[in-house]
Image (cartoon, rainbow, N blue to C red; front, side):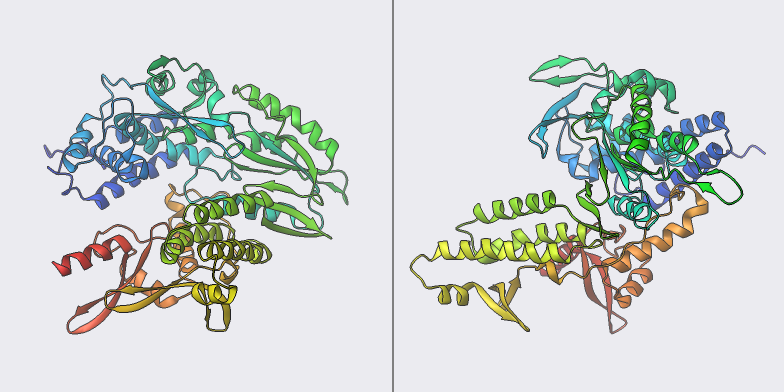
Length: 551
């Protein structure tokens, strides 16, 4: 009877060092609480949501995961105004105990300006490590609510959603013969910088005391402290979710006003109004230009209530036959057929980057240049390989060849073109003019070739279901199948590798972390019971194994 019961997200410390923490146990405990928050939100039990959020933000498991998140990403090397970095395991473990609500006061943000593609500056506010961890902790409690209440066609800064899903939704909405032909491209002026603090405090379902502290913490620029009267800082972990929740409701508002109407027994009127949104970029479709001009003031009023305004220079109404650019894609109908291609602006930006790398490596070895170019080419190709990109890939290949030929000729001004072609280009299988470098790997000869964009196979992408919620246990099976589908896509259909991945429970045998398409991995061999067994592991883990074997 007197047995002490512990909650599913205990605040008791069960480990004494950072290395001894069982991360699987932490994730299972936090996932259980997040699933309960989703269930309470769906049932409309807002009091229970609030109490479960309190339990989650005070649990040791959630605090440990929050610290792990801010110390394992690429931003962990950037300190805030206090110049503190949690770089050692002891500092990280100590930080878990410091994440307390009582007496917490966030420090001002460190203001840094970065260049945008249009030449203007984007202000970033970098919080301290402790403030980042606190935001990550409260985000664990807020995300299940935001995912449950979000617009079904919102795709930016959301778990298990990407620009690929937004692109496919555009195709679903615009591809048919009966699809709407007019599109309003919307862009919000300085979305993060101008969101109303009053609206956020009145409408965001989280701890208001903590939210107020983050919104009003100010920023430091040129050793001078400035107050923050509006907006949520770009650079804060919780900011994208707050911005998403601010813009959620636009789809519902349009659906309520513009829904299908039954004129009579035989006739139904479809207004053809659809919204596709990725963060602060969105498109709205309509039957006619006049219908969209009628919708525009409604959008302006919706945003005005939240302290936001539409960017006049970027918001325009276009016909589908003229096409429009959205998220780096050009979407246009050619004689009634919808084609989604890489935009001209995107190709131009990609080639500027490639030319910049080649120009800054005029004296480098051919092998070094290939190693610098291949990751850039792979990244760009992977973004566009699910759309109509073959012609663009072929054009980019030609432009890269032209630049490399110029680079090779410059290195040997006194040699003839045949000598230069022999020196840098070779035949691979049935293809001439392959940019290939020979080098020594230990005592053996090896070679590395420049990746050709046109070699990439164009594949179809399956869009995520609009109502799918990664925090809801009802959708667990769906996301497991989707995870396998995505991995199979990255394996280029090689089912033997998929079998290996499933045999390992999706985990790397060296570090125990998930093997997914986000991190580079490869195959290796191990002798088990006298037999060679293949398995998958991260590239970084493979290097560690090779180094330890050499010692």
